Amino acid sequence: MKRIIIYNCYGGSHSSVTAAAIHLGMLPGTRGACNEELLSLPYYDAQVSKDHGRIRFLGWDENGNDVFVASKRNLGKQYERMMDIIARITGAPQERVIFVDTMPYVNIWMIVGGFLSRRWGFNKLGRFIVLYGTRRSYYKFIQLVQQVKQRVRTQDIWWSNEYFNI
Amino acid sequence: MNILIFDQLGCYASVAAAAYLTGRISENPSVSEISRLPYFGAHRDLQVGGIYNIGNNKNDDILHCMGTGRESWLMMTAAGDLLRLLGKEENILLVDVSKFNSGLVRAMSVIKLITPLQRIAVFLAARSLARIFPEMVGILKE
Image (cartoon, rainbow over all chains, first blue to last red; front, top):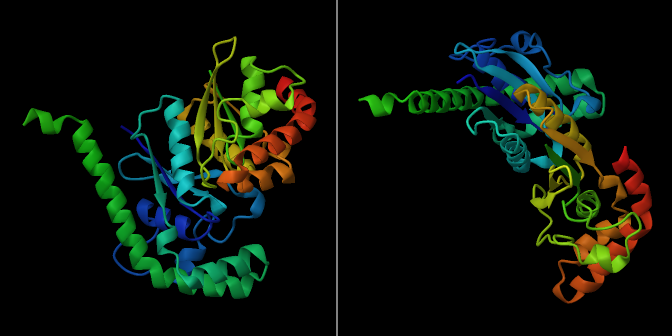
């Protein structure tokens, strides 16, 4: 089953974009990323307030799953729950959409830099700080992406009936 | 088809709107009619994300109310995008009535959590909604 994987964070601009890019192989998965690599990502440090809530397509992963980024502002964990309920109401299979919360891996540098850059318009200073923060948390994002891919693989094995054919 | 109505806690303006759509109340309901609606002021905390199934309307559409806190506008966008991704935009109609919950209703939703004041808080919230109800009906008819 092809899945819709939605990485989400407060503004959909830094941590979710970084994790989604690692997932898609747009950023290295075995070493740290440099500033140029991060800044070259689509949507990195580019969201504005009116875009909040939009689910933005970033690419297809190696298994053909669609990978998206989204912002959820103050909804926190409830965002995933509410979107899951809405998906269920439509009758979509429960495993079709995977929401990945990247907020637990956001550090204080990313918060301060993100606010300076996106909310208050101090782009240069904010970007400098948020890049530093992103690089500091980078290996945590790699680990998160590995867990997500593992989860997708496990579900694939389960749903492809391989367990039952042994 | 499903109709999903958003407001701050999913149990004030949204419940009244859903009740109107199911035909339980008229265009000019009394305060007691609103305050006695099932799920009106049903929240037990201020947690968003609560969902209430209100019932079906005459076209057999299923009505749900959902609490989205102060981010109803964001959920309208996000849910709309999700439905498009799933190819199910025809299955759900999204309605946001959070703007009809006045400051008084929002204050009463907090005071309602103080057990001895529950009834008066629900009554005052219903009274505030009854005043603005005709305006909300105008939006719902659209």
